[in-house]
Amino acid sequence: MGSQKQGFIWLSGLLFLNILLFSSADVHHYAFVLQESEFTKLCSTMSILTVNGSFPGPEIRVRRGDTVFVNVHNQGNDAVSIVWEGVEDSIDGSDDLIQPGRNLTYEIELDEELGTLWWHAKSAWASATVHGAFVILPAANETYPFPAPTSDQTIILGSWFKQELTEANETIAPGQADAYTINGHPGETYGCSNDTTYQLQVDYEGVYLLRLVNAAVNETMVFGIAYHSFTIVGQSGAYSRRSFANSLTLAPGQTLDILLAANQNLGQYYMTARPSSGRYVTTGIIQYTASAGV
Ligand SMILES: *[C@@H]1O[C@H](CO)[C@@H](O)[C@H](O)[C@H]1NC(C)=O
Ligand SMILES: *[C@@H]1O[C@H](CO)[C@@H](O)[C@H](O)[C@H]1NC(C)=O
Ligand SMILES: *[C@@H]1O[C@H](CO)[C@@H](O)[C@H](O)[C@H]1NC(C)=O
Ligand SMILES: *[C@@H]1O[C@H](CO)[C@@H](O)[C@H](O)[C@H]1NC(C)=O
Ligand SMILES: *[C@@H]1O[C@H](CO)[C@@H](O)[C@H](O)[C@H]1NC(C)=O
Ligand SMILES: *[C@@H]1O[C@H](CO)[C@@H](O)[C@H](O)[C@H]1NC(C)=O
Image 1 (cartoon, rainbow, N blue to C red):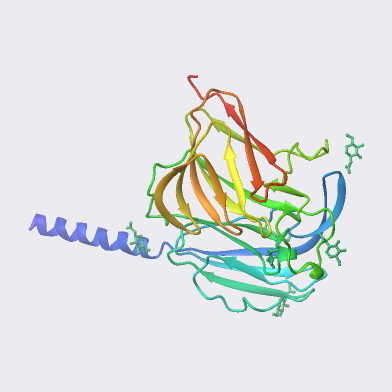
Image 2: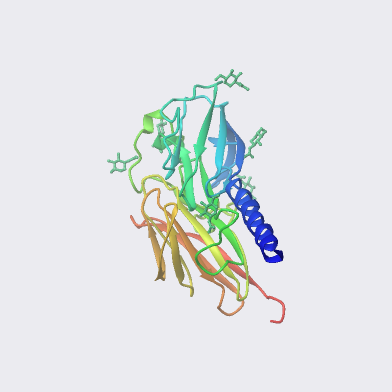
C-alpha cells in the first residue's frame, strides 16, 4: 500500500515536472527603432542608419523553442525590411517594406534553431549598418552538448564605408569597404588615433564560447587569434560535430560558434579579422586577467 502511494506521488511528481518542462517556452517582446545616428570612424563623422543608435545593433537573446515578437519602427528616411537569417519558420510580412514613419511587428516562432543566428536589413546598402546577433540558448531543461563555457561573447565582423550608402549602392562588390570592424571597432591599423579597439577580457584557464557573425557586406572574412586555436561547435543556427582550426573563414552571412581555451601565458594577444580579398587587417585584443590562484 505504502509503495503504491509512493509510486503515485512519484508519478504525479513526474507529471508536474513534465508540465513545467512543456510550458517552458517563453514569449519575448523587442522594440527596434530604425534611426539615423552619427558615428566617427576613420577620422570622419557621418550619419548612418541604425537600430536604436547602435552599431552593431541590439542583440536578441532567447532560448530554443521560444517565440519572439519584434516591433520595428522606422524613423529613418528610407523604406527597410528586416531579414531573420537562419530562422526556419516563415514569417508574416517578411517581404513587406516598412515605410518611414510606419511600424511592423515580426512574429518569430523558433523550433530547432540553436546557437547563433543574425538579423539584418534586406538591402545590401542598409545591412552594412543595420544588423545584429540573434542568440538562441539551450532550452531551460537542456544543456550545451559540449563543456559548459565560462561565459559567451558575441563577435560581429562588419564593414565600414566612408561614403554614404544609399539605394544607389544596391550591390556592394567585395573590397569596396574602407575598413572592417570587430563589434563596431576599426582598431589601430587605419591610421586614425580616434579609432577604438575591441578588447576581450579572459580569465586564465577559462573556456569562452565565441559567437562569430560575418556581417561584412558581400565579403568572406578570415578570423584568428595569435597563439590560440579554436574548437568549432556550431554553425548557422545548429550545433555541429566538433572540429579544430587555427583560423576561421566565414562566408558572407555565415555564423560560427567556437570555443576558445584561454590557456596561454598571461598577457595580450592580437585578434585579427581580414577580408579574403586581402585589403586591410583589423585588430582587436585578447587581454588575460589572472584568475584566483595564479
Ligand atoms: C525539453 O523540453 C521540451 C519541451 O518543452 C522537450 O521537447 C525536450 O525533449 C526536452 N528535452 C530534454 C533533454 O528533456
Ligand atoms: C530601442 O529603443 C526603444 C525606444 O527608446 C526602447 O523602447 C527599446 O527597448 C529599445 N530596444 C532595445 C532592444 O534596446
Ligand atoms: C580626433 O582626435 C583629435 C585629438 O586626438 C581631435 O583633435 C580630433 O577632433 C578628433 N577627430 C574627430 C573626427 O573626432
Ligand atoms: C504601428 O502600426 C499600426 C498599423 O500597422 C498602427 O495602428 C499603430 O498606431 C502603429 N504604432 C505606432 C507607435 O506607430
Ligand atoms: C553610394 O551612392 C551614393 C549616391 O549615388 C554615392 O554618393 C556614394 O558615394 C556611394 N557610396 C559608395 C561607397 O560607393
Ligand atoms: C557581391 O559582389 C558581386 C561581384 O562584384 C556582385 O555581382 C554582387 O551583386 C554583390 N552582391 C551584393 C549583395 O552586393
